[in-house]
Image (cartoon, rainbow, N blue to C red):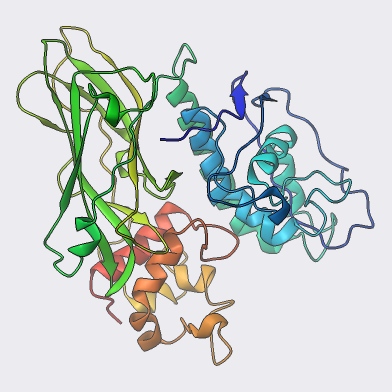
Length: 419
């Protein structure tokens, strides 16, 4: 698995990364109101960011990049699926690196991420909702989006610190890429899951010079469909076993890569904290918790890789199994979700009304998707689920909606899209 060593974390994240709304009117001083948060992560450029998808710098697309640190990459990925999308859609007119304004909405996402961290999310967020900063591109109409982005970013910072651990040492373990054409070739039989397996004691299954462990990990995959529409892949049943020896191992935080790209929308297995012992293979997460890995297309040549936050020898007295520390996703959606509720007045459940209808309503609905019409919404349920989970092409365009909102829409689909 390719890791691009472009940046190194020198400090610890504290309170702030900044969100600035893109202003199309650059006449005013756009730097006003910004304060550098000295407690944010400091980054030092160690070399070129690298291009992994064939793009060139002349094309203005940096390709998939990495900070060089798995914990920092998680934070970077959250920036990309949240604030960065918002900033590009609202701020790129002035904050694209071609003006004196801070370049947190440039085409180079890694550079934008660095500037964002330097400026701090609190100050950027404040400017985004300030009606006097640069109307109409800033103002109270962004309150909902900013509130959601701030909450998710704060949670991402907490996860970052947890990932780094007390000593701040990166203990992540990454696998080599694996492909299996059977995953795509069997998509016509939804009951079929194809197993991929990595042997952590085999050099071919790990990057060069990686630490080896007497462990095997397997994951089952299939092409995922929602409402008959392909949305990418589903992954389930991550299982680990010890191949030799009597030592126990503690494993934490499983992440998925497809074609060298971390799929940030997959969150179910990030809280894994399990102790693997000799003997029976251990299911690292509760059965049935399949991950949705959103991809625009699925190909027989797609490459899959796994990354754990850490794998270490556990104390001999450690209790085997997942234990009580494994966080099972809580279904926070109501027991019943109907279309009428999604477009109704109840602010706890009216996701379509608050997040979608401003663009997707009536005869002139964007993309021809009229979510004010039940039949049209039901017919496009697969597309809806894909877009609300796809950080590269999110719905709404300002960035992925909160996990609670996504769960409500997913519950409606799971229930058969009742009217």
